[in-house]
Image 1 (tube, rainbow, N blue to C red):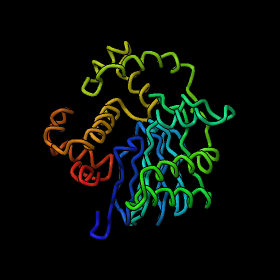
Image 2 (cartoon, helix red, strand yellow):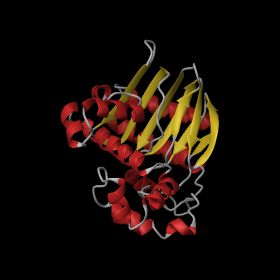
Image 3 (tube, one colour):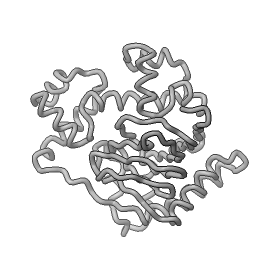
Amino acid sequence: MSLNSTVEFWSHPHMPYVETRRACQSRVCYKSHSHPTFSIGAVDVGESHFSSFFASEQIIQAGSLVVIPAHIEHSCNPLANQAWSYQMLHLDAAWLTELIGELSQDFVIEPHLISTSIPQIKPHIVDDPIQYQAFTQLNAILFDSTISILEKEQTLIEVLTNVLLPKFNWDMIDISKYYQQFSTQLLECFAGDIENLSLKELSENMQMSRYALIRLFKHYFGLTPHAYQLNRKVNQARKLLKNDGDIAQLAHELEFCDQSHFHRVFKQHTGVTPKQYYKNL
């Protein structure tokens, strides 16, 4: 990050289902990654290149929202030699599922599809000034230390249910019939600790060749098995860093090669170092 760039986070133990960030004049680039959360981003200044295995690449500009369902592989990066400013809101998928379940039964998507561990819903771009304004006002309220947690929670629910969720596109990902036959196996495999299994061990667990396993992961997650494993470790680290800032111990627990490897991978996926993330939260 340049000297003029800033990044800040907000979360609160009384609202553990939401985390949000604001980045100003950032030149940080991200590797392809995914979150277990339902994420909504907003471009405030500049342009960004949005890419995902599950959607067409496109340039997004100031005033655009990016809607990224849980476990969707994606990257959003500034154009070459440019900086951009953006916001990103992460919502716990189980919490959002419950919220949608409280709404009308005529809602356009089954709530449980929000929180499955296998991607179900395509990402999309929203170019709507009303939704962008509502989102930025919501984020400003979350960051405002003078506003009570009760008011923040009420505002979050009102903006989501009245303005944002009803206008989002809920297009389903097309999963080929060939790959559908492996979905149960995949879920059973994920029930255990897969972060440190070798490709050979993963393929034996799934009872398929290593090549077939790589294709299966790419089809379902947009990531290779190794990239998916690193991504899961980073998401675990984000969760653990909210309570413990012992970076060396965390790197050891998550079985990174060393602390510098953990530092490098975490920043590639989140745009900040583990220490910056812990201090901001």
